[in-house]
Image (cartoon, rainbow, N blue to C red; front, top):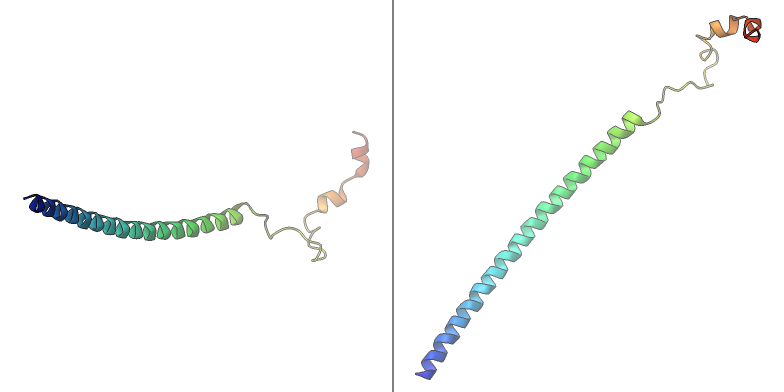
Length: 93
């Protein structure tokens, strides 16, 4: 009978090992799927961060509409008041 009890214990241990292998396999698949989800979220986050960076640059970067010396006569188009003012009035202050 001792041999029968040992066989029973051996079968129980084999069943336990099989169950543990199945659990490990399930956990491995779950980890793989979660890694895929994390990768997708990371890629989405990266794309969103690139959009934020782009829009921040567009909003806060220096404008391309600066005055340049490349177009003669255009810079002084609205400076008539400064050119025609009487400088002697400024010296009296």
